Structures are given as C-alpha cells and as structure tokens.
Image 1 (cartoon, rainbow, N blue to C red):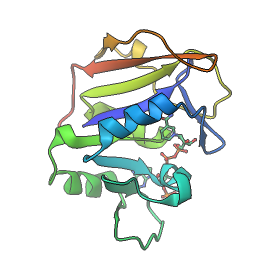
Image 2: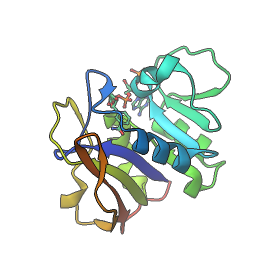
Image 3: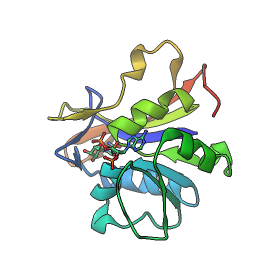
Image 4: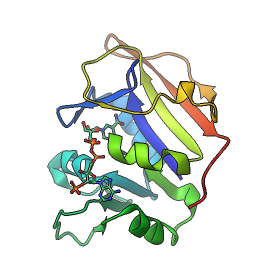
Length: 167
Ligand SMILES: NC(=O)c1ccc[n+]([C@@H]2O[C@H](COP(=O)([O-])OP(=O)(O)OC[C@H]3O[C@@H](n4cnc5c(N)ncnc54)[C@H](OP(=O)(O)O)[C@@H]3O)[C@@H](O)[C@H]2O)c1
C-alpha cells in the first residue's frame, strides 16, 4: 500500500480538524492518484471531507471503533486486523492511506511508497506525519520543480521504503 499526503516544513498535516492549506493543484494530484483505487482513512478524516461524503470513484474504507455511519458506499473497519482482512481482497498497489495522523502512523510500516506534497512554509499544526527524512528505511526518490499557489511554494516528492512489512 501507499500513503499520500500534504505536509508543511515541519511535517504538519492538519490543524483544528482541517488541512493546513487547500492547494488546487495538490487536490488534482490527489484525485488523479487515487481515482479508481481504494482509500483508507480515519474517522476524523472522513468527517472532514466536504459534506461528509465518500470520495467518488473510489472504494472508501473508514477506520473507527464506534462510528455508526449508515452509508453503503463506506466500508467501516473496527481494527487494523479487520482492515487487513478487507484489504486482502485488493491489489496492494491500489491501496492508498489518506490520513490522518493516527492512521498514517499505524500504517506507515506497511507502506512501500509515500507521496508528499511538501508545502514550503511552517504552518500552525496540531497533527503531523512522521519525519521520514530521518527514518533509515525511507529514501527520497523523486522531487519535482518548485510549484506555486499564490505566494506558497510546494514540491511533489515521493519516498520509497526498503523495509516494507507485508500485510
Ligand atoms: N495533509 C494531509 O494530507 C491530510 C490528510 C488527511 C487528514 N489530514 C488532517 O489530519 C487531521 C485528522 O487526523 P487525526 O489523527 O486527528 O484523525 P484520523 O486519523 O483521521 O482519525 C482518527 C480516528 O480514526 C479511528 N481509528 C484510528 N485508528 C484506528 C484503529 N486502529 N482501529 C479503529 N479505529 C481507528 C478512530 O475513530 P473512533 O474515534 O471513531 O474510534 C480515531 O479516533 C485533520 O486535521 C485532517 O485535516 C491531513
């Protein structure tokens, strides 16, 4: 499986239940990468989606111990074990972990790749992604040129994991 996220200079990913910054080009990248695939998210991230609606054209899996969502477009998993049973039906290359902090942290060891839209600014943040620049098994493999949204610069990065734990 893979993870996809946007992070600031301090690996901040969210604040007050929201993204740090909505960047249209990043949203398009996320849409292109995950369309037709399986997305795995925590309950908080699901609740932060526009209108609390599942993402279109994707299999939406939500981790939650207690939520009672009655939407048949959602697959709810009550634990990582249950999640892995559900994920065994899909090609691992088609599975994207899309947040938030708690789910990224739990599933990072199982990810082979991470796609990071790195915002070149330090925002106020209360949720973070692990700093994979200091994790020995993670290596930066691609880095785009600088892109801009208004006065915010950002780059599209990808990292690879040399020590993936298989599900
Ligand atoms: N920058 C980005 O790319 C990005 C992407 C996604 C999210 N975010 C941000 O991240 C923040 C949300 O992150 P978060 O860490 O607070 O929340 P989260 O990871 O989205 O959701 C946490 C919830 O997921 C459920 N959960 C997590 N692990 C579980 C497990 N092993 N078994 C069962 N349920 C489990 C629990 O729900 P229950 O309490 O219902 O049990 C838990 O309270 C927001 O600010 C959001 O905007 C940023």
